[in-house]
Length: 267
Length: 327
Image 1 (cartoon, one colour):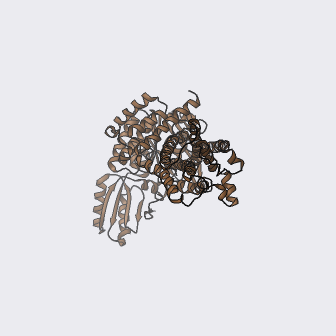
Image 2: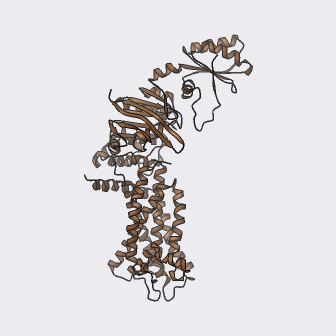
């Protein structure tokens, strides 16, 4: 069998193993799926009243932002799981087996797609309950969900790299918080970026989280001429800009994570 | 003879710490080598290099004629490794763990499955086969981990401290399992902190300290070198230490070790309980009162005292400093 076939076979086996864990620890999923629901409710009913986006139904504006935020946060799970495997010595076991080197990471990120599909499903249902609607064609909606998943997949590799570089799962959570909080909050996910002071506005306009959010809004038909996207190229071409980020992230972090895995040692 | 495991001049640094300092090892086909040493002596580092988990800074290592640094994949396909920490997935069942390892060893689905069942049976884990490993006892996890190392029926096996942390019963069970295994002709490198374990399982023992081999030989040769059993006495009064030492020394086959603080004397003897009785009788007639006495087999600490003049420097144990006294 060719190298690629073996990678697929080994990756499949690792994915299977990761999914069994989700099955055995349903409580893990409950907490993870609760957080997007909490965010939808929090922003819809608590902050929503005071955030005024003129002429626009805030909940409709909000849901795409919550989608983007959740898939980015979800990537933390990839990093934490890898750090845990390393801590428990199971990575040592894998590294002593004649399997494809990158299969553990390919399997990990693949199983986290399943996990993201679950969380996006839950969020969509919650969104529909609070008044969010998809106003575009079926295929545009599919493209919107596809783009969110693609972005989350790329971001999983960033967190996989973090997970392999730090000594414990707790550190992954803390370290990623430092990155993810500014990325998700200094963006157009919760408020229109033109309401921000200039330096933050520029950051928000070129922030990949804003791009995914804007792309999702367009593909789900949640944009409104009364709240136009900013003039920046990134916001005028959010789909293309998101795809560029996906390619760049994968090109950097896949080789980086694989290199770290090869030298990984139990800490 | 055909050397299946061979290491020459292995050196490994972790920042300033020299974990291995020119270690040579050779294990002939079908034999068991015991790598004996305290914590931090470099045993695990040596195993990690031989099993391709770590690259050496200098020196070379071969498994079945294949260079571990040049062809790690080829080496991985031939070896089985079971480490100090049971590296099994605790959310998976025992069966799922072994099945997964079998698939990753590329045995194919059917073979992986039947091999998993076979090993669970052999390691007495049948009843627990479909329970998540989380529910296993320490001994069961270790057995499963060892079974994991055997999935592909490897020609060469590495066991890193297979009984550390097990209770005495678990240890004896593990010894039986390992003995059965090597009876089948597997070449084994085993690391341990217990002289008794090396004595029971290994054909040859290498004593390692600060990343270097300090003694090598069969268990018998090593025992000749360090003497047979130990007589250990605690006497009542420190004032009698000198007299007690003179008495004990006349029976000892080697040097008497005195720990003044605990008023303990340890001396290698031959002749078993008869000698102990003689020593006690003599001490009695010299009016030295004995609080405790024992006849025991030599420990790693005795080996180190004899070979290096200092006790086994176990990173985390705080034993009183003992010194060797020659009278």
